[in-house]
Image 1 (cartoon, rainbow, N blue to C red):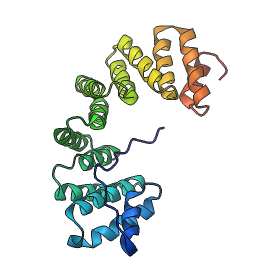
Image 2 (cartoon, rainbow, N blue to C red):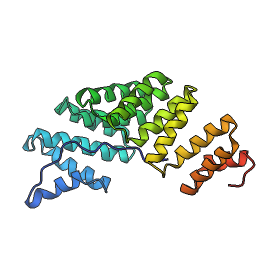
Image 3 (spheres, helix red, strand yellow):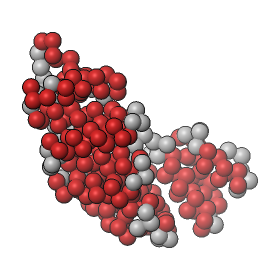
Image 4 (cartoon, rainbow, N blue to C red):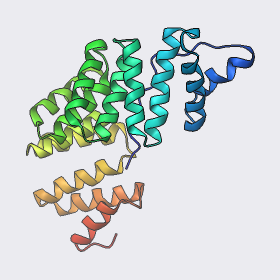
Length: 239
């Protein structure tokens, strides 16, 4: 499974000099979650000695680190603090939506993604993720509308084509689903799941050869793709 997308902070903590520089560096970097939590906490604990903008970003960045560490409730609490300091901070709404999605709290996730696009109407990421949640809820028309919007804003957004293909498939719009997977693969040729899913659609149509070709391509990219292995075995083909 691919690591979920993470919204980067839309604000940046300004550089500092001297002994305090490390806290900003630690809070801004994204390679070590524990280091990030430590640096952001130092900023937050200084309270109004730090600017509101810096504290807002620190809460958001610490929330990302908590989410990466599977401390989802702590992440939600930090994103909420960031939003409390800046009610128009679209990134924090998107990130809190991700945390609610991780908990399976779909309505809360949709509400936060909706806030994100309200404050940042070109936020393709949030349209795509809101579409994903609508699909998970079985609201296919709303899902496709959000993927449409994400693709209109960014015609090279491979993940939005992939997600729209799944929505089309679940809505029994197979031609549209295959066309979107074609586009997703053209934009991201290493997406083994897209090949596997396209294979499954051809399989359902009775196009055995096209299905096998796609399953094999999925395994070429990712030999650990168990779905593709099982799909080939079901067709009597050795993976």
